[in-house]
Length: 273
Ligand SMILES: [Zn+2]
Ligand SMILES: [Zn+2]
Image (tube, rainbow, N blue to C red; front, side, top):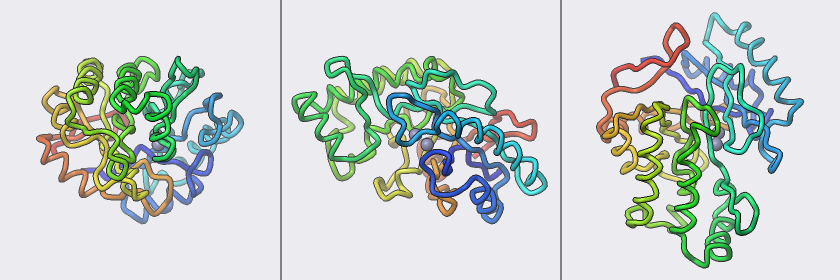
């Protein structure tokens, strides 16, 4: 099986290392394919995405580096397209579609579930009157349409709203309202043929002991015929393959007997697990 990772960030957005440092590390770690997925530009929050001018530099530097290192590794130029990015993601090797915040019409604002536990707790208390499941319902209602919104090949961190849940315990993920919200989103997304990622990013940052999505969601994806790909959502050169072995074991435990990878023709292809 090829060693690949398509979900990585650099200093063009909120990563710690340059693209070249990431490539050198990937070669040292024995990767066959490294894909970059810089955060697409979002006018509502410029704090962690690529600026418009950096997006242009990113799009010229990654292919240049791909050429420079082509005898050692295949380098792809993708994008992590935010749900609310206005500009369509055109001309990239692949698209990861991600919901980091969802729009709440009551407060006319975007509620970020990715920032910190205190902010999430504040949203639940102050905007949802303590009803965490109402927030979860709104999150998954938006997530339902991530493929239409972003045109993605890969659905990024499907249940990102649980990033802090191991410590915050905001949601009981077996609660009927939470399960119904998940099931509604999944039933729509599974018909779209996008690939779900098993994402170890929150593990490398110390927030979670398991990848996204949860084991029960992965079992449902498998039961519904969904495909998976493993990525680290790495923001640093030393975490490119963080917990990949754990993710493979988890995938097998959830019933998957194959996994998606990048073939020699640079298209997505399925290989046995
Ligand atoms: Zn993301
Ligand atoms: Zn990411």
